[in-house]
Image (tube, rainbow, N blue to C red; front, side, top):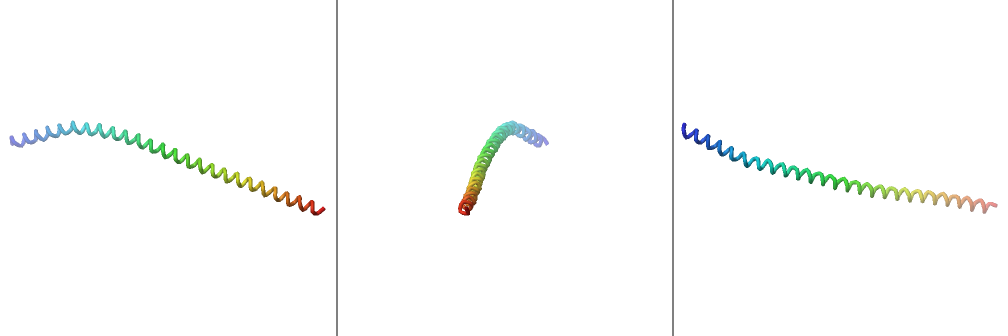
Length: 92
């Protein structure tokens, strides 16, 4: 029984010694978690910036298309008015 109690006390001492190292691991894990959160925030910011730029480019393309369509509509109207004017002049 005496050897058994010595083995238990020795195992307890080893377990307590391991706890000190575990605290270091906990601290290191906390630092790593903070660094990971910072990287996640930077990645989110980069993704948001890229999405905003893509949407801005898309808006510019849509505006250019709308401007071109409006210019085409105005040109068509002028052509129609010119044709009406020609018909009116030739009819006289």
